[in-house]
Structure formats: structure tokens, C-alpha cells
Length: 398
Image (cartoon, rainbow, N blue to C red):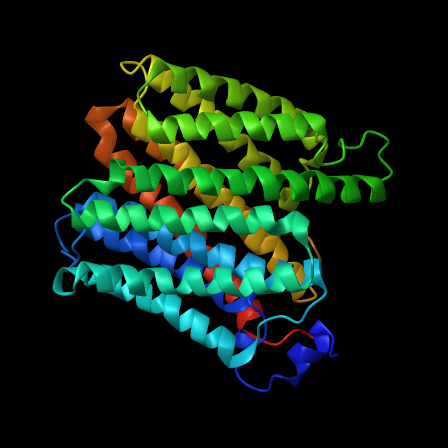
């Protein structure tokens, strides 16, 4: 059987189809920036998309069910061959999966002129096909420990189904079950996958630096308890988003994950932005939980929507950007170091998250901060596409 490297070298077509992270990281970043630009034009009254979704719901869907599945696809298509020892998906099968994802973005954008069922089927085709591919590989490779990742992806697909149903039945899906379930799935991915890679990458780097203060190894008993508390809090919030018990559960989850993060020696990574950003991105998850918990218990003090953006734009946006940049460098033979451009795109997304949160606190100045947040987001993801595009579009050296 060919190795993964031999399989990629045999592919003589476009370099972007030589490994799963290449098309999905590049197009995902482009979509993140483009979707935000379209949202700004919609806010300004310059553009009206022919979509069946209301503008806010389209904006939320574009990130949670457009951008996030693309990055999950890029990550899984790259990671699963390493997990299972089986060959990666390359070439035209990979290209077909990319076309399905692109068709989903187009179908949702012009959904006003299409049957709702057809739009949903097109939009769900790429993540469903990906899940089937990954299930086949994980089962064939008997890599049972990573079935949990497949389960979380399945929840994301179900959430998208609910989002489409809510839109088709005249609901407001931007505040519906589908969005909350999808957001919860994304956060659990951060908790599980981030909980593996952040301490592992940090430990490896600190060991090379000769540090004697190393992170606690991943997935200890406390980590599993923290994940169970987070799962319970998210399920409570999905079902009862305004109930005080959900607020208390969020506070408990936030505190436990702050404690979990404190065990990973993040303070020692500040001189390595490529590592430090992973800790910062993970920190935004418990920060969002604490903020949302306060918003539920004291709604006059904090806007719940602003708190959710700490999760959506912050935890998910920054964590995916951090993973994309690190994986691209590593898999294209580049040094694992963040230059000035990479550090700048991280900073831009952080400014975007902060600005969006402040917009919820200062209604009289909200519009200014909305635009500042949008600009930061577009700089972050557009900057990624410009900085990392050449690496993703060219063949790996050697």
C-alpha cells in the first residue's frame, strides 16, 4: 500500500487538491472574509441577497454552517489518515467534496428562488459526504477513540437541519435550537480536540526549551469531568436558553475550563505567538461561558448575543485560525514560527471579537463597533488567505 506522501506525490493535477487541508483552509478563509463583506453591505443597505433567510440568520449560518464545516473538513481530511494509518482523500474525489461545499454556499445565498428542501439537501451534502468518508476510515482503521469527533460532526449536521427547518417554517433561526446546537457542537470540538492539541503542542515546545514546568498531559480525569460539565451546560442552554439553571451551569463550566487551561503552562508560551494564540483561543471558550452565564442570570447587565459572539467569533474563529496557520506551516515544510503577518492576523481577529462585544455594551455607538469588528474579521481571514494562499496553492517542497 502507498504511503500518504506517495499518494500525494502521485497526484499530478492542481496542487490544491493534493491534501484536504489545502482547498478547505484556503476557501474557508476566503468565505469567512467574503461573507463578512456581504454582511456589511447588507447592514449598510447597499446589498440584498436573494436568500430565504433573514439577514441576521444568513450571517449566522454563513459562519456556523458555512465556514466552520469547511475548516472541520480540512482538519479531519488531514488528521484522520494520521489517526488510522489509511490513505488520504486526494485528487478529484477531494475536488468533488469541495464543489459540494461551494454549491451549499451558493444555494443558501440564492435560496429565495429555490425549494427549501432542495436548498437544505444541497447545503447538507458536503458535511454528510465528509462524515460518511470519515466514518469509513475510522471504522476500517479501528480508531474507536476518535468516534467522538465523528459524533460531534453528526450533531453539527443535525443542527444545520434544524436551522433549515426553522427558516422554512417562518421562525427566526438566528435565535433557534439549530444555532444553539450547532454552536454547542463547535465548542465541544474545541474542548475535545483543543484539549488534546494545546497541552501536547505546548509540552513538546517547552521540553525543547529545556523547561521543567510542563503542562499536565491531556485527557486526565479532571479534563473529562470538565468536558462533561460543559456538555451538560450546553445541553441545558440549547433546551432552556433563559433558565437560571442554564446560567448557573454556564458559570460552572466556565470556571472548570479556566482551571483546565491553567494546567497547560500557557504563561510560558508568550514569546511563541503560534502557541500562545492556541491558549488565548481556548480561554475565549470559558470566558464566553462565564459571560453568557452572567447574561442569563443578570440580563440587564450583559447582552446574551454579545456574549455568544465571544464564542462564535472568538473561540471558534480564533481557534480555527490558529489551527489553520499551524497546520499549513507544518504540512508544507515551513518552520513552526509565526511571523509579523501571522501575528497581525491573530491580533485583527481579537480586535474584531472585542469590538463586537463592546457594541453590545454601548448601544449608542454600536454601529461604529460593528464596522470595526467587521474590518478586523476581514483583515484576519483575508490576511490568512493572502499570507498562506501561496503555501496552500503550491506543492509541498521536495
